[in-house]
Length: 167
Image (tube, rainbow, N blue to C red; front, side):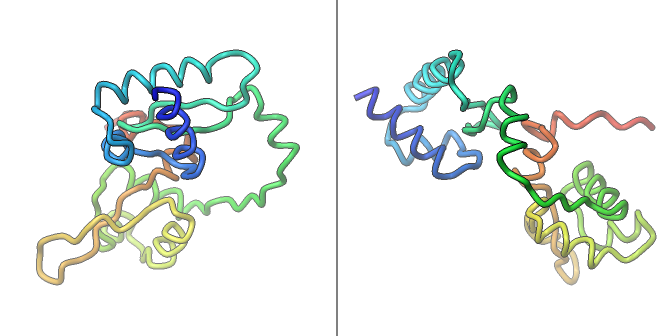
């Protein structure tokens, strides 16, 4: 039975290709939290063995299946991704969102001193930010926050890994 549950976990993580939260795995698999954590420790250990190209890593109270870093050169040669760099304006806006989230468009514009409409649209299209709610003030402006893709793109496991800002 344990092997079947571990195989199901592998299938879920592989299919998603993104972080899957612990609570979601408990619900999907109908297993107690402590048993899931025990199974995940076993799986992580199994994938840690030499000769495996994949790994399972804990990310922000969930898990992610991804490739091992030692195969990055081979992967880079196998896929020729289109590198679309972020503009300076997009990087500045993304940094503001990461450190101040949740934040509204007006707050970003007030901080940057320029309109951010196109930048916000670009970051939304790339999946680096998302709408996370509305601010409970007149007009109910949309609040923005970073996504799991943002964390993955910058090699972070959670927002706590962001460098501390200096005054």
